[in-house]
Length: 222
Image (cartoon, rainbow, N blue to C red; front, side):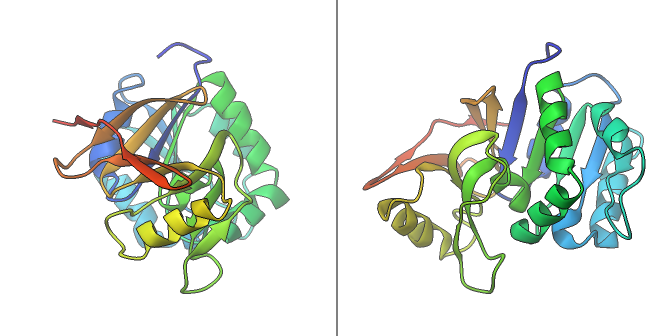
């Protein structure tokens, strides 16, 4: 990866096979920053990250409770990969903005740090997304970071209401965008989709526009 080349890998669900491939984009023994804000920094989620990457990456955390570390910006900018977990997207974005982490993430992205994440960590990079942040019913949220244009929907084949909700929203003037099945990653270079990766032969990503849904070619990860 060239320094300063902006990359985002947005993952629909079941992220680990895709994360393994993401690590291959950067140097050996990469520095990984784990951001678990969306799950209220649940300890089991952080423990999973440490266990899976033990001996293969230098993992640090970006915690916001009870308050962010003084070196939060330095941690982010020193990272090769920033991984954002799933959970409540709206709450996560509100916390990030209060503490200026949204600006730090953009700075890291623009310097060449790979940004990735699943579910909430997928849709946060876009202008809009499908979320259950406001209650058990799925709905549209137009308050994403906007690093990537348009909208996104994770868990496209993993939750039965995702597809009808997203297609209806786009038909009703929600920004068009991308949907990803579980186990699928969308690799963006700059703001353009460069490639779709899948860990499952029967899974892919889709371009969703008013009145149409187009399956995208995906490379099966070995």
